[in-house]
Image (cartoon, rainbow, N blue to C red):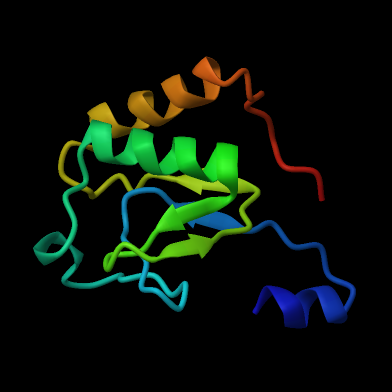
Length: 104
């Protein structure tokens, strides 16, 4: 979708779902994910740290997946979301990555 929007001359802001697992093809597991992925502060911190330092995140099968993201999302309906957001923010602070609105 982002490639089509970019080709059409539209601004694109890509998003990484910190609290949803990826398949090895880079697609997001949006439903039934709790059976294959544990969304804990530690897990999300590791994923976001990997994203910010290597540009890759492990898929559910352990395969490294290259991720291009301008924003990081934690869904408010994820169990424990009130602990997940601060854990993600702490990684940004730890790595001195500024948190700001994306440039469009």
